[in-house]
Image (cartoon, rainbow, N blue to C red; front, side, top):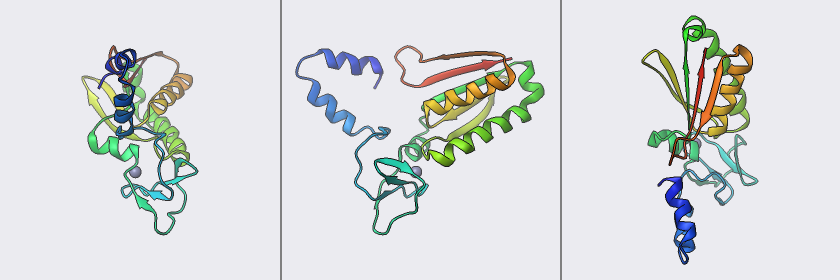
Length: 167
Ligand SMILES: [Zn+2]
């Protein structure tokens, strides 16, 4: 479903109930109220005080896949970062190391912030993320370290963040 359809529903009277129903079933909804304790069977993240965390797995915890693992399973990123340019090809290893360092630090605190994939596409490097804020944070870290040009947008009708960096 696109953001447009969703906001269009809001304007029609009598549709709120259906909308709420749909949101309850959104597998990527991060603030979904979960019974505690709950553990993700894939990555062992635990719901603690209403948030997914890396706490120790409590005994008798319910099992439910976390939004990050669900996105990875579905191949449905929350954010794309595309890196390109001559500077990138000359310093790719260095830039990737900065990116991985940033992601490791974020992921150690926030289980839902992960890289999904990175691949070369026509001379660009495309990295996908389970979390839009992480895509943005990584792009800003690259920009602060290496300058260049940064652009972020949600393409029309899309809820997935697209970030471009080039130098
Ligand atoms: Zn998980």
